[in-house]
Structure formats: structure tokens, C-alpha cells
Length: 106
Image (cartoon, rainbow, N blue to C red; front, side):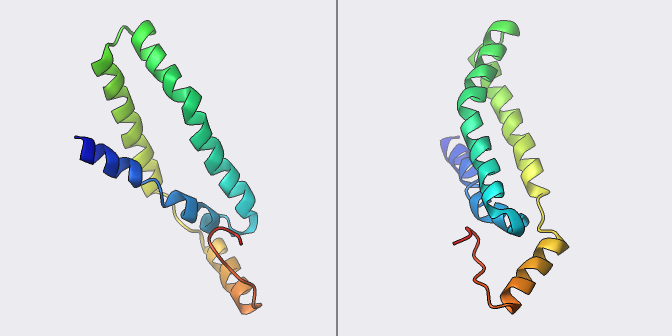
């Protein structure tokens, strides 16, 4: 089970390279949103555990199932991420102008 958990968490790592490609004109904003999502988990996670534990009366098993459902929902949303035609066109035009195009905006 631990290996499966590690694999699912590691699957989100490519998002840091994918986000600037989805929004090539606003790379800094894309990375800021990614950072906001990562930082928000430090207060949303304990809140979910507290709500599941105290409000709904779930024990540890219920909390684990709640996080499993959240991970499945996040995986489903991540699968739908696509690089738009506009973003591809912008990147191709930047390359044609001789600009350096990298995923992280350096």
C-alpha cells in the first residue's frame, strides 16, 4: 500500500513543468497557483481530518477513505489538463523569434 501511495504522490511532480506550458504567457502566475495549491494543503489537510473526525464521527479509517477519494478526484482532474492550441502557437512563435522557451521560464 505504501508503494501505491508513493507512486500516486509522485505522479503530481510533473505538474511543476506542465503548468508553465499550459500558460506560457503567464509562467509566473501559473507557478504561483501551483505553489498556492501546494501550500493550501498544509491547512486544508488537517481541516479535512478534523471535520471527518469530529463532525461526521469518522474514525481513522473514514479519514483515510476521505483522502483516497480526494486523491482520485485530483487524479481525474489532472488527467484532463491539456496544452491549448493557443499555448502551442505562442510557444512556436516565440521559438521562431529566437526566444529561449523553457518550461520554468528561465
